[in-house]
Length: 410
Figure 1 (cartoon, rainbow, N blue to C red):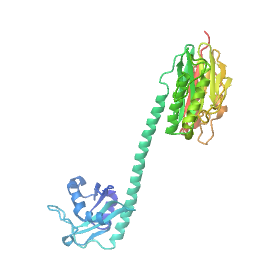
Figure 2: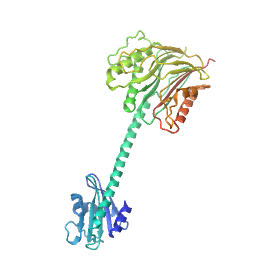
Figure 3: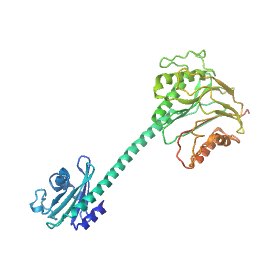
């Protein structure tokens, strides 16, 4: 801005010049002087006075060109005492963009009748250009401010989402358990949960709430809480557990927990059309027996020690939370020593390469093939290959992985 001012002053053969930038209230937020002048801070005590009672104030009020041929006989000029420089000619134009007054551009000379009428159009054109630049800069600043605020809110939402996930995995003797959660930048509704149940059982949940944003993250917390509550045989909002297993959890409890979760969400929040794909299982670590319900979720896999798929635990019912009184079936499986239960959300097969190609199920199965190793090693391998497939492209969805490996018999 200083270079523009110096250039304009040179073209008009002015002694001095200034640009006052105004805020939305018409107050000076910045003052720019020609290069040969002192630091504007040294004039700070005069700026408000000039803007209120001088030529600058007149231009601010009338929003039109102020042209003073001789300051000695023009009442718009404010004569300040004890000033080393005495201006006799002045030309000031408003810096406008639309209806907004963004500033003032003023040129001075020590001789009267210095500026000509032909100078005014060029000065107005310069002021209009400055106005466009200032408006763009302020728009950019506003967008940056909103962007930072949005990023802060997303970060808060992401922290809330992560806080819903278990901070510590439950211990299960004879089992190697690992999880991975790699959030996308955009807030979404993936979650996993592992929690102890009475009778030395282990609750296992992995889910993906539809949609993106804060709504998905909030419903993620709701689904997670409901599964925990209902698998513990608790009543909520008039929904009472009438299962014959109410007194002690058994491997039949996933069916009742998912059914009640579905009915609660569908009846109380159906107008929001928020549902989830959900796998919920109850594992008996001592025997490896698993009872599960899968509501439209990606198939959870049972892998042999060499990574071969021994079983696919496919859907046993519809997505959860869409329709009340939806029918779900219970599935059963048993993990032998050395086998691994592997669950994931669609952020893995739907990861996109830069050319838009999905990772896909077949590639995922190829990643899983081979010696499993530890549960953590398996998940690290899947996550690394998924991220590599994206080739630097930002994640469009969370990557959520769960693995429970039954340790080989000694």
